[in-house]
Length: 95
Image 1 (cartoon, rainbow, N blue to C red):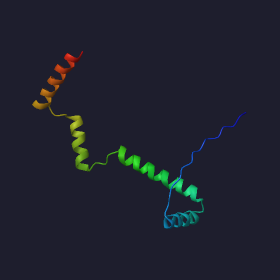
Image 2 (image 1 turned 180 degrees about the horizontal axis):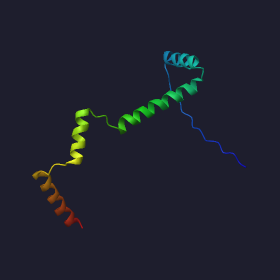
Image 3 (image 1 turned 90 degrees about the horizontal axis):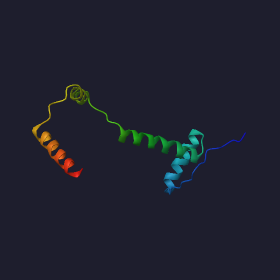
Image 4 (image 1 turned 135 degrees about the vertical axis):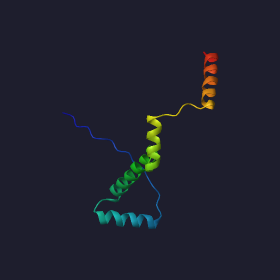
C-alpha cells in the first residue's frame, strides 16, 4: 500500500535582528522550532483576519433592527420602485 504525504511549500521572510531574536526566544520558551512557531502564529493570525473580514458583530440594538427588518420588511420606497421600473425597461431592451 502506497503512503502519500502532504506536500509542503516554502516561504521566506526578512526580519530585523531584534525581531528574529524575539521570535527565537518565544519559540524556545514554548519548546518548539522557530519554523513551527512562525507557522503556528501566522496561521492563527490568518484565521483571525479572515474571520474579521467575513463576519459582522452587531450591537444588541443593531441586531434587533436587522431581525425586525427581516421579519417585517418595509414597503419599497418610491425611489426603489422607480429604479425597478428603469431596470425592467433596460432589461427588456437588452433581450
